[in-house]
Length: 139
Picture 1 (cartoon, rainbow, N blue to C red):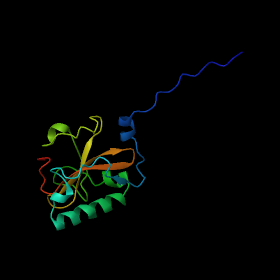
Picture 2 (picture 1 turned 120 degrees about the vertical axis):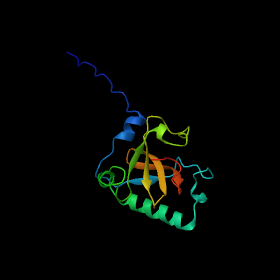
Picture 3 (picture 1 turned 90 degrees about the vertical axis):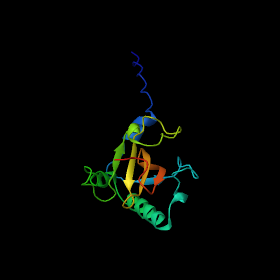
Picture 4 (picture 1 turned 180 degrees about the vertical axis):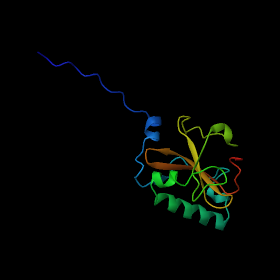
């Protein structure tokens, strides 16, 4: 007798890949979706702000997601890079058209008011904005 053909599995979508990453794997940083020259470009920052952004990106790339999630917390009690997820309606800027609505935008602290924002796809954090004056979100 012949074997029954197996049903093929659907290939995973980019949105499901974005949400599945190994908690203990070091984070990689990408600027693939970053658009230089926009309002929230690194070039709009002062020298000290740029230094803080780069130090925070270096710190992020030396951590695992488990370590990052441990630095979250409630407003007023956040520590370290203060990882925070944002809904689109909590942002004062529109999501870039090349970033799927399935991908959650997250931000990290890079100084007292400075933040950088992006999305995670697999184990890569894709930077999309630098916000030296905390204008992208009001919270």
